[in-house]
Image (cartoon, rainbow, N blue to C red; front, side, top):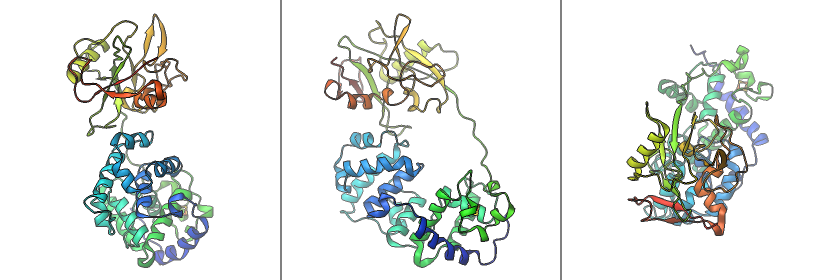
Length: 395
Ligand code: SF4
């Protein structure tokens, strides 16, 4: 059970935390120039993403979309392209929708309170609290993973922060610590402490400003807090995809539905193999069901192949990963849209194509510049849906 908090915990935390933050806070670009737009972009990117991963994206994003009006006016595909590689693409779609709402429905006026922020697409309670407190000092406590860990350790509480009951308890504790007049700075300092000092695996208790009031440190085993959540078994999927090429050498790719995982991104057509199916049967069925294609395009020089992997296998994006290759005789030569593979895949079948960027046809198309471009195809590959596109190859 949870230990009782040390007497005067809230007062001591407030007294020690903010001076430490003033000395140790990282000079991050969204702290140097904080506007509603920059703060919102940063908070959206930092959902599920580490600061060092988000930094280059944040800088590129502000060059590409320097204002909310520029973002609202951009095409969604351009927004997804700018987000490419950051993961959780629903965030990019939500930002695009939110930018349009701010510029049209709200006539350029940004939300102020946490409740107003939470009404924007993609802004949950954590992000809303962070933005309202950082921008307007609204006294609402932030409870992200870093803050939850610090709170559990401060009280030596073996809670599982992913459970609903534990989150309610942690939120009450976070509110107790919050100084009403410095809410924004306090929230930011708690998050910074969790990121820099009270790290998940190696808490730096020796340099922590809160160690004299920390029950986890006093217990001698701060790692024991919070409780480890039960591990979920990783799903293991077998998927197949086809590389279809017409006589002009164009390769068919399709766009995922926006409501699905990785929605709006591009992939070779295919899907999950059902029990008892061969890979060829799986691909034929997927082509028939998804696209109404009953023949697998031009058969010469192309053989659909497969890879069995977990979603984390080689870090590539979803089911288009590591599954498309062209065989010439017995020699693997690479992805249909890449004449010469530059890297070797790290998945279990080690097909000779690069795992991530080279498998993303949209990324390849963009890199290909003048020789390759995406265009809408209304006819060509059988009974095409509106979503069918081709990767144009002129080489
Ligand atoms: S003393 Fe150690 S366990 Fe406690 S808050 Fe600081 S870093 Fe975390």
